[in-house]
Length: 181
Image (cartoon, rainbow, N blue to C red; front, top):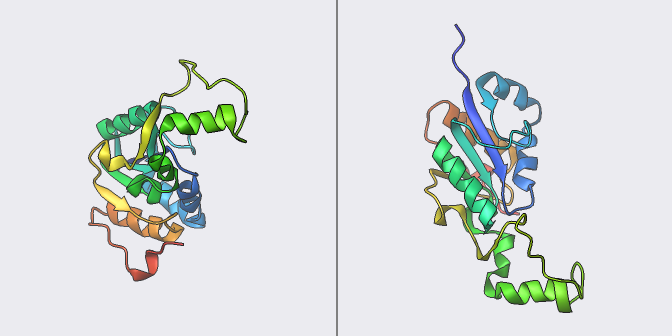
């Protein structure tokens, strides 16, 4: 009888989707990975909510109320939660706005500056996620079990990290797999 596959969920929060692109850089190694895991919520499956999973991979920081909700859903449903990439680990590029008041940013983008729609109203629709005053790394919101740094981490680093987790080993990344481009 075949061993049960581990369930893996992934999500991109406030980031650029670069970590998911690196995940796809696993290339042909995705096929043997699919022999070991089944994807739950992920851009690969387009499932909208995280069910019970063994491993959750979080890309991106936390910049709005929806990000907080999704991250808490992952923590509630994933046995192991991994912060993947600089935005999840330390806020990354989105956190560069943290030194400015949110109200000033919204005024510049929507009202006075050369942003998306100068002279328009600042959106205030209940369908839009409420922006937070600061961008946060994910560990400031929930307990994170592992951190996979990089911007983005390489496909090789993700492959090695996942294989260690799947094998029940403590993930280790050697000098050649960690880089910050």
